[in-house]
Amino acid sequence: MEFEEKLAGLAAKIRQQGAAIQTEEATKNAFIMPFIQSILGYDVFNPLEVVPEFTADVGTKKGEKVDYAILKDGAIQILIESKKIGEQLNIKHASQLFRYFHVTSARISILTNGQVYKFFTDLDAPNKMDEKPFLELDLLNIDDHAIPELQKLTKSAFDVDSIISAAGELKYVGQIKRVLAAQFAEPDDDFIKFFASRVYDGVITQKVREQFGHLTRKATTQFLGDQVNDRLKSAISGGNQPTTIAPLEVITAPVPAEEVAGNNELIVTTEEETEGYNIVKAIVRTEVDAKRVVARDTQSYFGILLDDNNRKPLARLHFNRAQKYLGIFDAERKETRHPIGSLDDIFLHAESLKATAKSYG
Image (cartoon, rainbow, N blue to C red; front, top):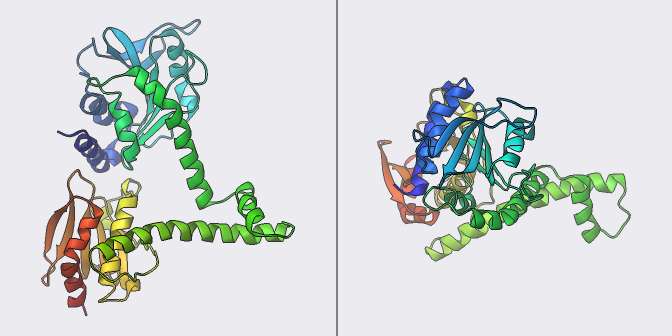
């Protein structure tokens, strides 16, 4: 099985079972041990590879344990500290990792709640675990850039020197991306002043700062929308489709109770699903007003409806799996799933999508 498929399989298991997990021990059994075994490739039942409840007396601290120690060639390479799924992962949860990192041969430590994995090393000072991770992985929102780095930690490809050499760049790129995301969502004064000082010649008073706070939020939102729409225009033009499309507008309607079953926190709308939704909307807008096309995400698929009506399904995006599918509906509202290799493949089904939209009048 391909590495990405294994990740997708574990992610699907978390979506299905996450709400039923109530303890740290259950989290270990359901998600963390499968991650060590299936994703990293270490035999959790072989004490020469994986030692649960690893103990090493540290100074005055006697009998403290780290949840797992992973060995390769007889030496401890990775330490893992576990928390219950859904629990926030703060640096205060890593006290054992800090102490054990100093007295073992491990160069990598992991803090996880079964869904989110934070990877640490010793970039700032030798043999002292950094306070900030060099890599973060959320199995319900996987960053494609993290996958090749994660593969370096697998048993078959473990290369600590390669990992450490790449860790510095990964650490700061990841932090910059998170800062940008936070600023785009809610820009702070310095971020606002940065742009205001470059486009406004007057004195930046409190009133001007408030005005540019609104303008900065609006500009960053439109910028991100333009990036998506530029991609859509390019793809449509390449497919000999009309090049005029609606502005980016993502509407998430309430999710039906029968789909959620009390697990709203497990529904994560990905960037890829959002882009797929905008592609479908760009295609069908020649038949219906784009404002009538509404997104409705669920645990099992991302639905696209006309008029926010379950009886008027336009398409379903089955992206929570290794092989992605586009579901298209006929006049009888029967779904046919078509495998797609990339988002651009949606345009191959443009006529069918327009026919479905047209059938609803």
